[in-house]
Every structure is written in C-alpha cells, then in structure tokens.
Length: 482
Ligand code: F0G
Image 1 (cartoon, rainbow, N blue to C red):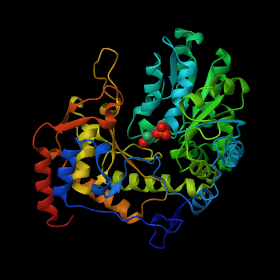
Image 2 (cartoon, protein in one colour):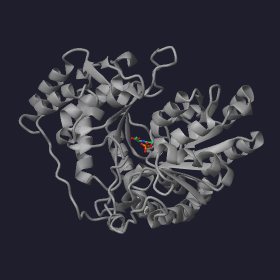
Image 3 (cartoon, protein in one colour):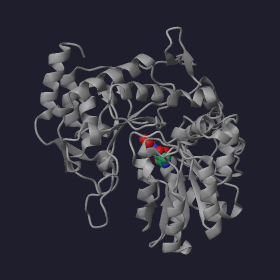
Image 4 (cartoon, helix red, strand yellow):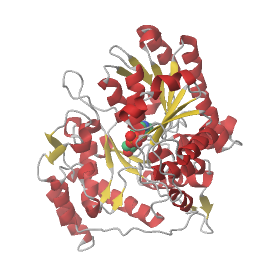
C-alpha cells in the first residue's frame, strides 16, 4: 500500500509522514563499539544508546508517536480513581477491539502474569501456536507447561507460506485429548507470531481454533500485541478479506477470543497494556489481581498520559497507511537481502527482519550461540543494535539443561515511522559486508547467567579473539570511515 512505483520502474516504500521532532544519533568509532561490547557482556540488551547508531533492538515502546498522541497526553486527567482518561481508553478498546470490559496493566507481561495467576496451576498445559519469552516464563513460573503446535512449514526459513503462524489444528485436538480438557486452562494464540519471524495466522485458522475450544469447553486467549500487523497481512494475503478493512479484520479476530491482552508498547505505539473481554465472569476472575499487582482499576500502573496516548494510538491502529509502514520497509529490506543470497525469514513478516544465524554462522555450533554472535558482530561493524532470538533467549529445562532453540535468529526490528530509507540501506550494506566476511565471526560463552529470562542481563564473552580480527578486516576495507 505504501509502495510507490517510481519512473525508474522501482517500487519504493515511500514515507507518508513528515518528521517534526528529531533525536540526534551517534555513530561512534569501531574501537569504541568494541569496548562497549566488552562492557555490555556481548549482550545487546546491555548496550547504552550513546554507543548505538540504529536501535533495532525492538519495536516495544520505540514506535514513533503521532502529533495527536502527544496532544492527547496534555489533556490527561490525573486522578487515582475514575479518571476521564481511563473512560476514553475504555471507549477506544470498545471501538477498536470490540470488547466491553478492560483491565489496565503496566505492560504486556503484567497481563500474562495476571492471566497465569488466575488460571495456571501445577499440571496445567497451555497449547499455543508458539511461545513468547515472557508468556512462557509466567506460565512455567506458576507450575504450568506449554505445548507449541505450529505446522512444520513454520520452521522453514525460505518459504512462501502466507500464514506460518497458523495453529496446527490436528495436533491441537490430539494434545487436548491426551492431556484432558480439564488440565488446559486456555489456548493461547499469538498474533504475528513473534519468535518465528513475525509471521501471521489467518482468520480461518483462528475460527478453526475457536471450534476446537468450543468442542472441549476451553477458553481462547488472544495475544493482541501485534494484532494490527496480523490484520494488515490478512488484508494482503487472505482471499476472503481482500476487499475488507482493518476494523473488520481486527474485530473478526477479537470476537473469536474469550479474552484478549496486549502490550500497548507495540499495539498502540505508546506504553502500558491491557486485558479485555466481553465476559463479566472472566472480568470478575481477573479483576482483583489488578490492584494487587498493578494499581487501581482506572490506571493499572500506568501514567494517565500514557493512558491518553494509548487511546489515540488504538484508533490509529485502524489506519492502514500507518500500520503498513513497518511491514513495507521490512518487505523492502528482506527483498534486497534475499537478492544478495543472505538467508532471511521469508515471506517478510512484521516487527523486523529476521536473519537466519544458523545458516550465516553455520560454522558456530548452537552451544556457542550463533544468533548472539551474529548480533554482537553486526553491532561491532555498524553500530546497529539487533536482538538475539535463539538459544540465549530460551530458558533451561527443569533439570537445568540447555534447550536449544528451533531457530537461531538475529532480529532487526523496524519500529513504526522511526527510520528513513537511507538508514535501511545502511543496514543492507553493512549486513552484506558481514555476510561476505562471516567466517570471521566466532562463538560466545556465558560468564554470568541469571536464572530467569537470562537473555536480558546475562553476560557473555567471545570464545577467542574473533572480535579483534573482525575489526581489523573492517578497518582494512573501510579505512577511517565509521
Ligand atoms: N506478547 C508479545 C507477542 C510480545 O511481542 C511481547 C513483547 C509481549 C507479549 C510482552 O509485552 O514487553 O509489554 O511486557 N515483546 C517485546 C519484543 C519485548 O521486543 O518483542 P511487554
């Protein structure tokens, strides 16, 4: 939708917004980037933005906000209880997501905590299309387990399947029969399945999941954090919806779920989060946990300014021009990298570009974390900060053994309306150089490993002096250029 045909014949993803507030960026010399890696334990989460040029760590809380969101923040109604800002948010949730009741929380994982506290016990099993790190951590923290039930196609890197996030319906039914419906507190569907490359599910698949949920009397929970993008890809890829609109697709999806939750840091380009439902019974089951863990029921741990920005951001999610910006840039970058033979997840998904570190670093064993190594190497040679989405992001099993990830990905997030096309071209250029010099990338090992969500604050070090060698080659090829 945002691709404009140029006279040259090229299709260019043209920015349909203008820049009105800017933030200065720094591209520091490679010697400083090397120091920063050692200081940050070769973990991109631990880098300081003063050393980062393009921050592609995540889209969480980093999407550009609109003039209307900022304006709304100024009219926030600061009240502990009964704030008008909350009334506006509730209205937005009803208008956009089609749900009557809203429980506000401070971010997505707070919703996951509350849902898990309420429904997950020792012996519970939660089937899902695929896990997200925090969703899984909250379920296992309460004694539950998860079952990931994607079709095999989901794990194929070079694929043209339009809906790799689809739940495997046959496996879902088998799993329910095997474990017994009473041990399954809910089925979780994640829109734009994050960890397999931002891949959507189809509306038809969600209907099929709903039918199984009804057959066995199990709740269906929809993680809506990336729902806008999933809906946009449904408009692009699902025949039934090709002449539809964002609102119809979004509400068709949310109406199939008993309970929806979201990270507003993603869904509405703001901060915060929420849980919403049409069921008074579900609302009552969860309600008491909000004041206990988050804050009063009309702010849920958020600043009311964020509540206002979230309400406006939710309405803006329905704007196809806005929501298509990031997927269109991603499609462009995936296309350019693919032309050069660099292995990336295909088809292009949402959230970011996902480089297949298992192939790029096929010489690094999974025990030495190829995706983490690639993330560190890219930062070193470019100042681009991506995120490891591979075995470092996995948690150890109950016996303390490593569980190796199905996919070793370097995720380069493309937050909404943040980067320009020349910056995207810089990413393409530096990744191409790194790919041509990939044999110089080496492995990593943990020196500090936190017991929970280790990828956030864990510390690693290179297995030898490969970073120095990579830096030497960079200097040989680029001279004094940054
Ligand atoms: N669900 C999904 C699908 C997510 O992508 C995230 C966060 C969450 C839940 C948790 O929300 O961060 O507000 O607590 N994803 C971020 C990311 C962190 O970088 O992909 P949160």
